[in-house]
Amino acid sequence: MSANDSALRLLAVHAHPDDESSKGAPMMAKYLAEGVDVMVVSCTDGSRGDIQNPTILDAPHPHRDMAGARRLEMAAAQKVLGVQHRWLGFTDSGLPEGDPLPPLPWGSFASLPLEEAAAPLVRLVRDFRPHVVVAYDENGGYPHPDHIMAHRVAVEAFHAAGRAEDYPDAGEPWAPAKLYYDIPFNPERTLRIHDALIAAGLDSPFAEWIARATENDAEGHRPWTSRHPVTTHVESAEYFGVRDRALLEHATQIDPGGWFFAVPLALRQREWPWEDYALIESTVGFPAEGTTETDLFAGLR
View 1 (cartoon, rainbow, N blue to C red):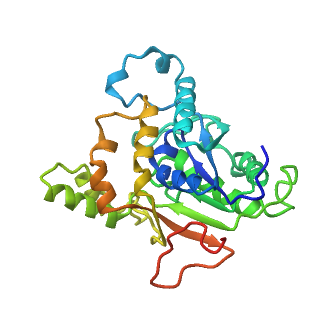
View 2 (cartoon, rainbow, N blue to C red; view 1 turned 120 degrees about the horizontal axis):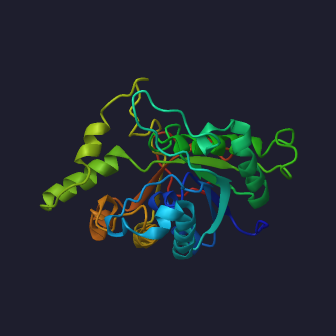
């Protein structure tokens, strides 16, 4: 795997197989159509996921080998998306439940020391040489241990990959130019679509999320909303269908009649034709105060 020096390159860091389809798939499809090299990283194998699709609850493969089932699903979704894909090779940590929460499984992704978990991503950044890295925010987009760890390793790799003294055995240094956080739960977007659904006489799947978005956690943060303002709207409505098709390939995780498909495609395209991001680090400047970007590669082309 070597970088194409003539192309712009984007690396999207995700926690589990299926996250790449639910977060940023239209954006990636748009940039692929423009000739950008796009790579998705799945940090974990998804082995501790539950079957979320009621139509396959009795399917033998995921009960016998969830990681293997999700590997096949990821391969199918990759074909839909058209991206390059790499596994970091870590074990899913699962979503702990209980009060107090139980310890994370030994050796799972979120239980590892940061340098151990970040090392393969540093090597990948130095090999693929992305200009733009897209990651989760500090809360992981939502508070799952693997999502939070995916944020941590992405930020570590973004900074360390360009420093020769860090991870000296992981290849030649490469410093990406821009780091973005994905903002999947933008309150403005969610409220607009919620209101449009109600106005159309349709049920909204967002009522519970809107209620949760106003609740603070023990640290005074709102875990279901980003701590960062949106700086960048990437118009990608014509690729929203790619997201839907890729999601459906993750059959163990996605209910075809569930939440992800509760909003009609045409309404999504009309009410909010963008995907939203926060620019966190940049060597080529930030948008002027009071303005937003329309391109993750602004300043690079």
